[in-house]
Length: 255
Ligand code: GLP
Image (cartoon, rainbow, N blue to C red; front, side):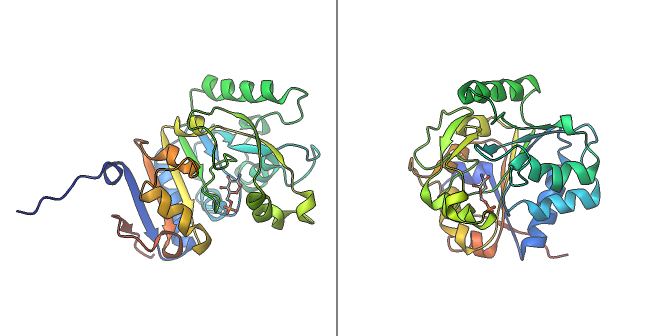
């Protein structure tokens, strides 16, 4: 009899592959809704946009859910529509009629940002912790704004963006010079503390980072490694992001 080695990652991590980004979004939204989160951790960026649209269309989130951001830029005007809090209000809270005080983000206007980061960490704790954390992933494997080299033990903190991340995010700004350098982000340990994590990745640009994640490539340069041992991690992506290696995966049916 052939002995099949047990892989810890295969036990824990579910990898779902959809034919396109709509299939990915439908599956992600269904998984989020089925967990009935009281506290939903929300990522920004392009990856979760269709999932949010799907959640709005289906009206499948509990009405009293608290939305907690992963991260926020420092240095943008309070009224700047590129602030991540503003993005979540526009994409999710407003269309669902959620009150403004149910959307939480680090106070990046505070004089003492370290204290603001500590307060945000405390707030997450006071809310009872994050039930479901939605994540995207950067090309360099960053989650939230935890760049390669960030400690796996990190809690919410002030961070500085790598050039590659600023270049990637420059598409939302007039030029690269306008992209902030400084951020406040949930730390890797904070993110890994969520009860359930749903990571969405589409497009070939994410393939290298996703391969590192699903094959558990051990390197301090892969921030997403903090998720390796999470007890409830679902990775949902398309073939472009998740193709290339032979780890176990489930193909989503196209609807
Ligand atoms: C930003 C955000 C991350 C996001 C990443 C990828 O850096 N801080 O939370 O996952 O971008 O963004 P996108 O989904 O647009 O590729």
